[in-house]
Length: 357
Ligand code: CP3
Image 1: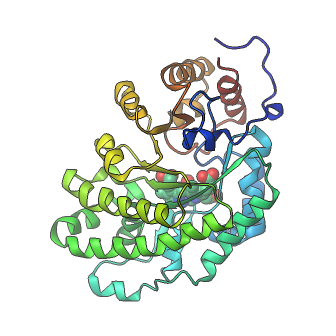
Image 2: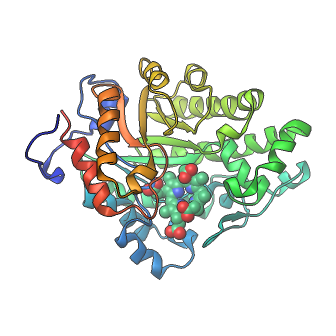
Image 3: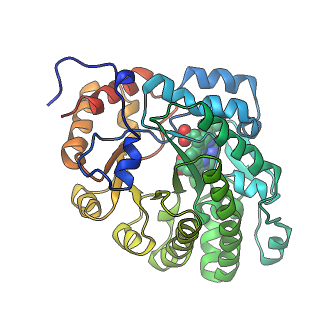
């Protein structure tokens, strides 16, 4: 199954392999590879820079440093794509909300809890925050290897709204306030989501104009809603966002990551992303059905990659490659790489995917 001699990955030349796959130009393809959160704390070279800049947002807005960080995993591992170093909470910050990252706490966002608070939000693409991020994109673009693709990104409106309404991150919040609002005051959530979408569209178009070649939309908390909530607050606004981006910049592939939702086929039929990123939990049958019509991306469990069982890593990677490689497939994790992941495990993963035949 694997070549006897492991070639060094950095010498292999791929011709924007990932874009070929996403645009279905070349059905038979080497499997493109990148990892969510590939620029982050598991890298000593990231921790080095991060140690000198205590405020995480300052780092996102330092275009020079952010562009270096974006390229760190490319130099080290030769992935097929670089993802812009920034955060999904740039959008709320650009709306005038206070955003902070505290160690051991995660993000803290100035809360919006009722309709009249919405008036506080400053919607405009003329803000210094977007300028800094767009500058990072163009710096990366000018210095990156020509065979690597650059991925821009944003949060999908629902996930960004969860941080704004809860005032803090993800599971820790319990999503109590926002879920209550989806039942008792759904128009408030509709309005907030519309504002986020209207701010995200120019942000993404600016990333594309600065050099982003693929867009990924992260909807990390899409699965906390019931079916009706999913239709109203995930599917409908994401469909709109994808359509607006596509209308304004046709041909730029869009990958959606509505993490762990039960309605992925319906999502793909209605939203029509070019690619869909899959969490580790999805069944092989379901993933194969999706793969008939959509490029699938995923889905190695980040816990397995972070663990100390090399055989388990090999077994899992081989299984994924056997099931999905060949066409309509991009190798990735099922969620972001964990900070404690050993570098040698990532090197091992890269050699397994690259040498798979
Ligand atoms: O390689 C990359 O993907 C870099 C760019 C990137 C970051 N965040 C950098 C980051 C991307 C694409 C994100 C997306 C993001 N940010 C999501 C969606 C994906 C997901 O993980 O579900 C979400 C929900 C956020 C919000 C966010 N940012 C959280 C919850 C946290 C704290 C948790 C953590 O990992 O510390 C962040 C901080 C963050 N964003 C870090 C990085 C590298 C760690 C900051 C540090 O150095 O301390």
